[in-house]
Image 1 (spheres, rainbow, N blue to C red):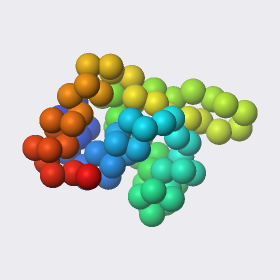
Image 2 (cartoon, rainbow, N blue to C red):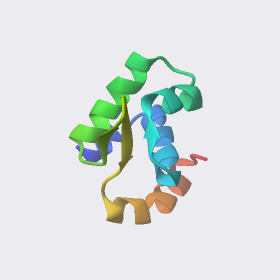
Image 3 (cartoon, one colour):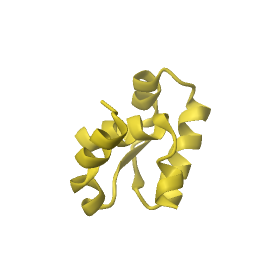
Length: 84
């Protein structure tokens, strides 16, 4: 399930953005230059895989990385896949 969730360049970019700080959908729209519905689709895949979690803050839903051990190995994964 995890590898399927990471099979998209967009989802890898989201993971890297969330590594730096929690983000809402509107911030991820800007980072990826994609629509809200596209971002939500990718976020849903990452949530189902157990890699991220969302929480409400006022009227926005923010997302953060969930698996600490995944975060520790993210550099290795990025190097292997040549993702910046």
